[in-house]
Length: 244
Image 1 (cartoon, rainbow, N blue to C red):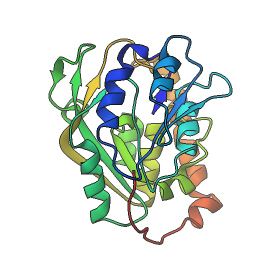
Image 2 (image 1 turned 180 degrees about the vertical axis):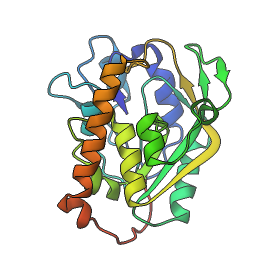
Image 3 (image 1 turned 90 degrees about the vertical axis):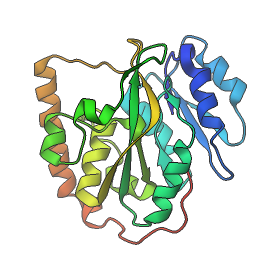
């Protein structure tokens, strides 16, 4: 999880995650130098398996997620925002998926119910709203990979990290890289209340020129990765048991 001035909904989100943690699971929270009560709330929950890490300076969402992921020790990594609410059984669904497929590159994208700031549902399915699905060209043109809906094995990081400077967002990059190296599964069952309150960490709309620059940077970064040594020499072995 990453946080930045997220005190308003943070306790609710933490409670929905912590109640699902099993033996051997950990929750890594990277805070991007919040100035509200976020750190106070995080420190109330800090423990051996709920680890709080602070960025060295304000990094923004992409680098903050990179910072958080870099501290993860589990075999399966599940991304989370600071202001949603996990539905019961979400983490078990992740465990079941990765237990059934031990290939190293296997991205799981889970559906959600879109909600307003008070978690009143506004759309029954994010997938339907975005017309979500696989496809390199499709997702370069209009991204349907939303980070807090994603889980993957840590082997993906040997190819996808460090995140290139030119990419628009980490989730788009992880989704497209996953398509290049392995399988992607879109699970239609909602496991998350996806809060869109107007106070979220990232914006929804950007100027056309900025979007064009980002897409060019994304395509260039994908081509550079395809030609890179880390892509050619990526591990292909299956992994053993999964852990979140």
